[in-house]
Image (cartoon, rainbow, N blue to C red; front, side, top):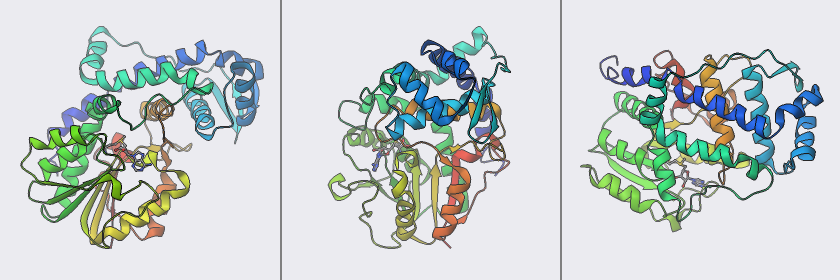
Length: 364
Ligand SMILES: C[S@@+](CC[C@H](N)C(=O)[O-])C[C@H]1O[C@@H](n2cnc3c(N)ncnc32)[C@H](O)[C@@H]1O
């Protein structure tokens, strides 16, 4: 394991500096200041989550009847709490606070690294946060998986952090199983994960499915440079989450599902994973990339910057169509167990700061 991940550790060291999270903490606080949210909290002083939402609706015109927008406001509260701007005195009772942890200032050198290594990620989330006020006031979604937006998604999804995370997951799946067999890339997007699957499993039978074809040309171009062959499933045969996957029971040895989980509607989530369980062979593995939402006890995500980064990401991508957000970690573990999966996680303590982004579940 140590040899396989030798170079990955250098990449992890770069991620571990949390330069993007530090940059975006300042940006999200600036957003809140400009939107008058700090003044609202100061005036409220002691308040429930509902009172916070009602006050932002009244003072800033936020449309809080919509679940996605309301969720963004609760995520913002969690982010403020992490930064020290609110204290939670008891569950759902907040108090405005100035016990703020000083935000670090990035050096010139660090700012240059953010531009060079994390430019695409920063550009996407920057635009989302710049637009968040308009969206919260009822504006349309900024981005969707629709025609004309392929390049935007492509740039985001190819970012350094996502690429490292996918790579670690696929390396681990390769160590733990055979290099042959049948692999499904569920929701291939613009093909960044698919290209990595082709590199790691060139001899496997690879199938790719998504609920839309709009990103397929980009994905096809990307895998053209690899030695593997991909079977593309027509998007007309699958309407997306909630629709039964168009495959026989026990069809696959591996299912790779990267960055798609936050787009599953809440009420369909368990059924989606049951269906993945159905199409896996006994002994087959689901590898999944999705951050877990930080738990208040800080048991699962111990690093402060990691937690802030997840809140920022969740809030920012909230302006995208179909976003349901990162899921509670214990709920994911329990749901997988209830379905019949067993955890097959080799990540804990190897990449502590990425542990909750990487999941492997095995069908016994
Ligand atoms: C953030 S992208 C991830 C793409 C790719 N797996 C990757 O790692 O780059 C989310 C993916 O979920 C798919 N998706 C979004 N909403 C969906 C839905 N309701 N049903 C099925 N797939 C959906 C999108 O088409 C897209 O491929």
